Image 1 (cartoon, rainbow, N blue to C red):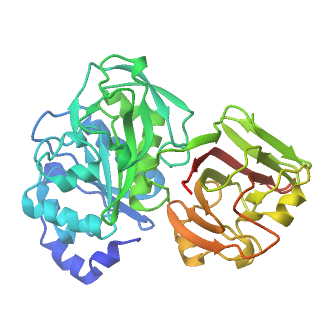
Image 2 (cartoon, rainbow, N blue to C red):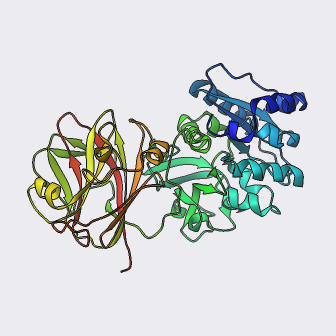
Image 3 (cartoon, rainbow, N blue to C red):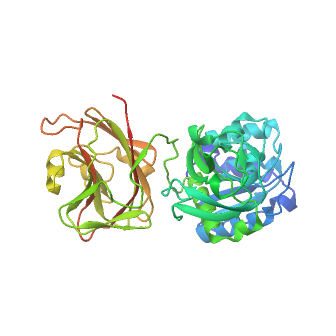
Amino acid sequence: MKHRSARLTAAAAVLLLGALALPSQASAREEPRENAQDRVLVFSRTAGFRHDSIPGGIAALKDLGAKHDFAVDATENPTAFTAANLARYDAVVFLSTTGDVLNRTQQTAFEQYIAADGGYVGIHAAADTEYDWPFYGGLAGAYFDSHPVIQRATVKVEDRAHPATAHLGRTWERTDEWYNYRTNPRDRAHVLASLDESTYSGGTMNGDHPIAWCQEYRGGRSFYTGGGHTKESFTDPVFRTHLLGGIRYATGAVKADCRPEQGYSPLFDGSSTTGWKQAGPGSFTLADGTLTSAGGMGLLWHKKEMRSYSLKLDWRMTGDDNSGVFLGFPASDDPWSAVDKGYEIQIDATDTPDRTTGSVYGFKSADLAARDRALNPPGQWNTYEIRVEKERLKIWLNGVQINDFTNTDPARSLTSGHVGIQNHGAADEVSFRDIRVKELSG
């Protein structure tokens, strides 16, 4: 359990839960398997329009839980929203809820649950819920405004590292009821996917139309997707994987950088390596918008000289592999020039503290406790932010700061230089996606 014990002791939970009785129709609960690590509450009460996809949605979420080791309880009874009961859950899913579904006491319990590291998942009409509760509006990210008829549209996938969207290509064609929202959540949430309004009729958000997003909110985690109006959504394996990733983020099972992100420009956009140069042996293969290291030891570096900047990129190892992100080195056809004159932000599953993931290689270890809490294991995507200002270097892993280093070596300088990714050796396979940069003032 990641946060359940922090909310309620086991003894108190037994006493309080024994006193809690919910109507049988809406609160029939499945007993968790002995090895279930997480428990999710699905809440689908409606005080307005009721979607006929709700039963299929509950069935799909229970099926996902059975296959992926989390228990799912479903209810439409708002009395489930007590501090004692909510403490049992790693995430609460609002499945196409509509209107005012909780009273003030229940709202307070849910606010306290989120503040204690709770998780929220909103599906479709969850944005058409609790208009007079500002906390909920902030948690969901945006309120529903209107929608056109059900139709096919192109979804632009903006983040291919988050577990809800990592399985998708750069675009996603699907049919649904596409909500317009009263406000754009981009300035306060991290947009995972948006609608291409030119591919369907009825979009009203002036060409910037987020449709799925995530955020850290007042102590907890929030994921919202606008999909899920149709019954067919919940039998679609691609959409179900989308939901699974959102749930895994909300429970804390998988980490992701859900800070708002604006102002970045691509250095590698997934289509070509124009502007990049390979130094030394080995290479990177390009497939599905992903660069994967092959052979070595070499370095793929970008020809643009960087000064004060924030560099973000997504990376994934397959096992105990080795790679790194180099910065602050001069242009050269010799990869050892970057080793000798720049700095490497290490990617390595196992090594000494100053030579493992998150370290400034050979100079400073990451905060290993923070790194371990933020790190996704081999096989899953991680996101680095590497921020350089003058001679100071800061590193974030999946949104968590794990290193802060200042250069004092007169033979090296962070004030200018190039950035690159390493192909370490023939036995090492590390992949990179969505390398982008934002220049910082000063």
